[in-house]
Length: 430
Image 1 (cartoon, helix red, strand yellow):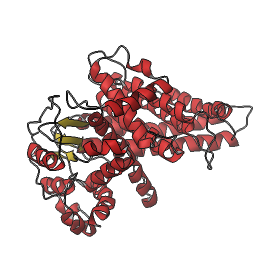
Image 2 (cartoon, one colour; image 1 turned 90 degrees about the horizontal axis):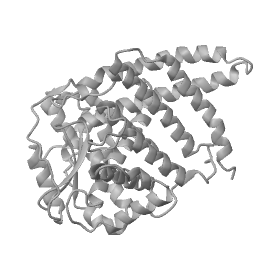
Image 3 (tube, helix red, strand yellow; image 1 turned 60 degrees about the vertical axis):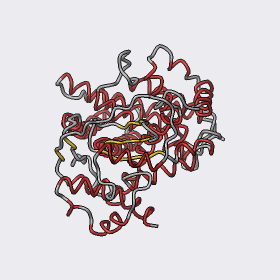
Image 4 (cartoon, rainbow, N blue to C red; image 1 turned 90 degrees about the vertical axis):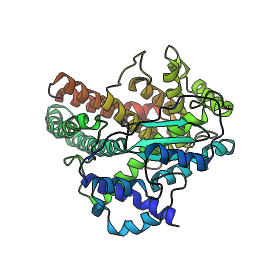
């Protein structure tokens, strides 16, 4: 099937985009969707409205359009050109997004699928580095800005470097004299200096990322792996982040946030039940309606990606949901500076969103033993908490125009090492 083939190949084309110079363009007049009367979308209208709104050719995949617009069509690998040209847009202008949306539709409850089957998901060039959902005149749309995807690439690679850093710390911790922490601290200092170089590159690119008239390809050279097999793994990890993003926007549709009236009872019941059982209802108090909508969409997306709507999820899917949600939301917070709660903001701060992720993870995993590889979702959550802390410190140092404090980085990472011992006591043996 050309659809499946193109979906698999699409990530390789996306990787080629990092070689393409920045695309300068004048943003189209962006349709701002406001909740109106509830109307039933159909896929044909959704597809037509998307292409008409963004003035994009319906007979080209997004990546063909992107490279053509940049005058860099020759950068698309020759072995993928034919497959992309034969591919027809059904529910997306990008093969990988179509594959993601179809997979999500397959795992949601059957009673939600009629709505989801009529949505169109598209990559766009215009607008801010973000994703959005909107409905108008029997058309339901999910959009993800290409810049957002490029940003995710860099964060995934920097997290991979962070994982290497932690692995080296663990190795040193076992080899050092237990009576003295000095050698470990000295080696940690050297490693954290290397890690800070990757964060410096991220900070340098933030200004271009925030410029809505410029699409700046990702790929910080110091953070990129030169190992082809590792690069393939990281490309798959990037798709996990996009899966959460698409699930988040799908959740806005399922919860009726894009229209003023819609039968959203079943989705709302799933959210309310999870809020109660995870002791998270307090996170939605004292915030405005828009922020409540975002947290509800975060929660439902987390459950969908984890395959946890109707049953206890396998750890494999839970790992995907924890990682995809955290990196997707962290990258936005780092880009926009939306770390803490602000009453006037349309979106909650990262602090509250990560609290929700943490409580959901604890609820779904704390009473379960480690997996066959001795891993556990709470261990992954701790790693992401440490990574998020360093991301904030990097952002804060850049705002204050000072160097990233190596001592603070070391403290966070040493906390993570000690945290692993605490988790061992909390997790049941079998």
